[in-house]
Picture 1 (tube, rainbow, N blue to C red):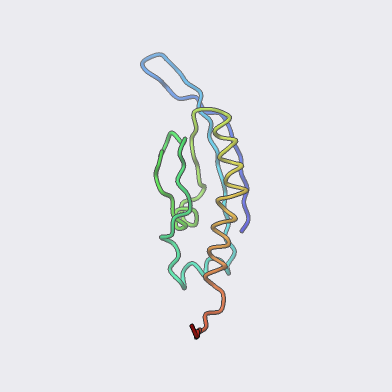
Picture 2: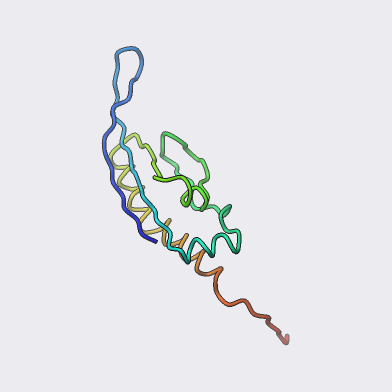
Length: 117
């Protein structure tokens, strides 16, 4: 999985003459061919990837692995610079590593088990 993240300021209209600055985080997430094959083979696309709390565009909306895979680039809008930076950090340190481990964990060898209790 390769990820490229950028962020920039955007100005939106607020009311008739008002303007307000918002902060956009754009992530280009490229899954490897192996990861795509695993997602398709084991139908992992509907699994929850994350739910942004502070995003303005889709607050508390659950994004799936399919959203990260097919809706490119992945864009979120935030009200403050801090919330945008925290999301970027969470994406890099928690969300994407968790998604990758979920995908690769489902690709592991499946074998029967027997127990004596």
